[in-house]
Amino acid sequence: MNVILPGAATANPVTRGAIDCDLHPGVPGIATLLPYMNDFWRDSFVRRGMDGFDLASYPPGAPLSCRPDWRPASGKPGTDLAQFRAQALDGFGTRFAICNTLYGGQVAVSETMGAAICSAINDWIAAEWLAADPRLRASIVVPAQAPHLAAEEIERLAGDRRFVQVLLPVAAELLYGKSYYWPIWAAAEKHGLPVGLHAGAMFRYAPTSNGWPSHYLHDYVSQSHSFEDQLLSLVSEGVFVRFPKLRIVLLESGVSWLPGFLWRSVKTWRGVRSEVPWVKRPPAEIIREHVRLTVQPFDVPADDATATGDILRQIGADDMLLFATDYPHWQFEGGNVLPPGIPPETLRRIMVDNPLATYPRLQESIA
Amino acid sequence: MSKHVVARVAELPPGERKLVTVKGRPIAVFNLDGEFFGLMNRCPHQGAPLCAGDLTGLMTADTPGEYQMSRPGEIIRCPWHGWEFDVRTGQSWCEPSRIKTKQVPVEIAAGEALVKGPYIAEKVAVAVEEDYLIVEV
Ligand code: FES
Image (cartoon, rainbow over all chains, first blue to last red; front, side, top):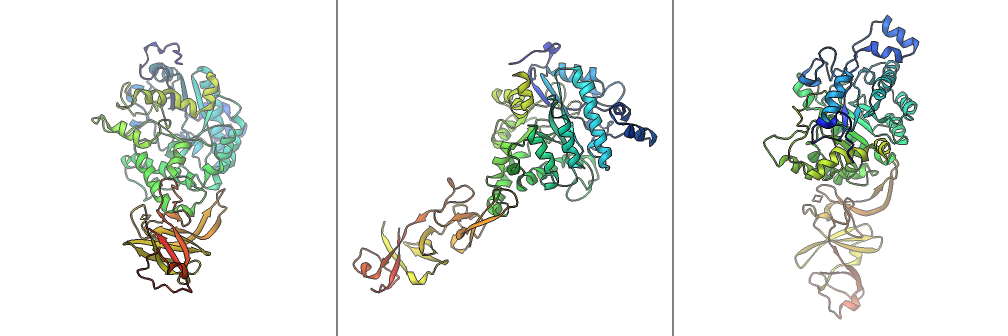
């Protein structure tokens, strides 16, 4: 099954042939996107002097935004395609890599400007990245601030099978279960596209439910709460009942918070399920069926050999985890992309089988 | 197993429940529109007295936001943590095959028959002209 592609001979033996489900090409700046915009927006961005739509969640200079040995000699993290190929694709022997571009289109306050940036990113990534390397795939970035425009963008690009997912920030303007967002779920389900929720916020409200944190430490660690909130919203508002084929992929969510969350959601549901009678199964069962998580970061103590196995057992499903490097974000050192203690059979599923099962368009491209 | 007279039928009108004790075991007896059901008065979760819970209907929905209520009065909600149990079967709503409360058979017998035995009527004085609830424990 493992096709060793050129350059992969020296790759990491653990990851050779794996499918990397979360990587981040960098957008150098708005000038890169202008050729992919219409006259109005090309003129507007130039005349109004607007640039620097990098996400506040990932400032280009922040340590997390780029591992030191992956930082390009010049320019922003992830902007050098040659380096991206050498380090992320050849370096890990990746068979397919899913590009999740994080840039301001997804979070801009203006609906139409956000949509214009998103469309330009999608056309740019298709023309300049996907066309350059057959291993690359991408998520359709969409304006979460305008669900109807997001659905239009999905419709516009769904015919290009190299787009394998829809991408949204985990914290938007409302909880994702609200019917306001249903056009996005409908379009994604219709085209067999999972929707990836990536760490990072639109910052329309405080990133924690108790207010604004003072420090990066708090901001980043508390991201897992946003993921929990969105999962609860999707489950309790009945999104998976209404869109039974919808798949959600949590990107850069962390993994080890999941077991306690699942248990708590089941325990509470048992007592109050009659307020959400469309939730007919324990939330953990619904989440196990509809939700996948990338394995970067994987928060476990490095000196506890059994911790990872314990967490996998508590998650209770070996098809939920997807391999990811999160390149060029700084989550691990060297080639130690996963914590020790994962059984070989599970490891193989994480690397290959689970991504193929999650992304039907990857499956079809090897069929 | 033995059969015990626990109440006069007239004491337990439709929609009501009654807690009785047989061989030291508390049993909740329910009248659902003239049909009688018995459940051990012990929630399988953490042992709460089920008989003290609310009797409600079954809330269901095929799609989000379209609420339906059926089987009014046939679901008992545990007074401690709200798990729902089907009075007719003892099964929980949340995990019907795994989590259930034990059923106790209830039947009706005429006083006339009772006088002949083999029923045990420790606490209820049996009169020939009345009907009685019998539980088998
Ligand atoms: S004791 Fe009955 S639900 Fe907990």
